[in-house]
Image (spheres, rainbow, N blue to C red):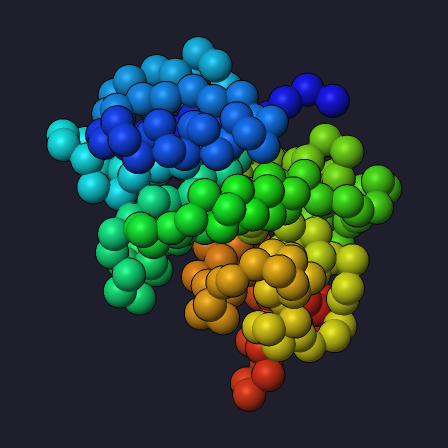
Length: 229
């Protein structure tokens, strides 16, 4: 099995070194950058499997780089974990809305970082049915990892894709935020329930006017995928 490649982007050399040692001991291949410009070039040239991205850096910030990568078609599905000294909820939500798949607050233990990284990589390649699923012109192709509406490709991030895949294979049932976290994020991942709302909103936006109403809010419970009005 080929080792997964992780790009560490942090302007502090000591933090990059600490993370690199931990990841190499866990059999990951490591790339390093100390600024957003170099990081973007390395993402394009080396196509890493995951980005560990520091929030606060001189020049272009980590959050700006995350937004740029999520806007570009070739890098939109790159999993990103934000490294931040900011623990406030609004900053966490801002990071998630910029496209980050997870965040970890400094100081953190190398062991926790590796566990979170494994979980994000595992979620980025979900197991699932291989047959395409079609509902009202919305087509999900698990093998090609593509979603289209009436034949037109839809652009969405890896977390939104996994949410949609779960919903389309579990229709007409209401799920709580906690259940969705367990099913889509994994039971051993520490993510706040409000994270679900952020990704639901992004998924609805990706689906557009024609299909966003398939994801219904169930008051007092959570969400349901249904073709019924």
